[in-house]
Length: 114
Ligand code: 5GP
Ligand code: ZN
Image (cartoon, rainbow, N blue to C red):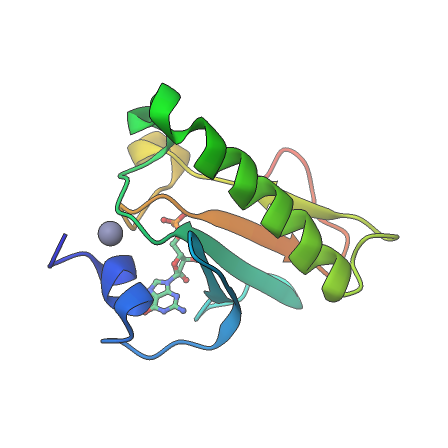
């Protein structure tokens, strides 16, 4: 998707602070962090959200979650805990229409988030 912000970030057309990258996944720091650690983890291929995922995406989605756990470990969050969340659609608070997981940690997070 040529007009998608996160596709542009994945391609390097828009700068970002990279945290992790592999064949399938790109992870970078959120521009407006809501916690001491706030990292976005996105698939390199465009997918609007988890609502548009299907059986063919199962391996990718599993991989993203394992990558998230690995990043959390490398950020030193494993012992204290952290949150991994993906927002879907308007009520879910999704503002960028390219699937992304927020990895949040480094402080006590409230639940429900509101
Ligand atoms: P959403 O609200 O869709 O779940 O999350 C989108 C996230 O993307 C927000 O936390 C927002 O701060 C972040 N974001 C928006 N534009 C940019 C950008 O240009 N660069 C980076 N690194 N993060 C962005
Ligand atoms: Zn995209």
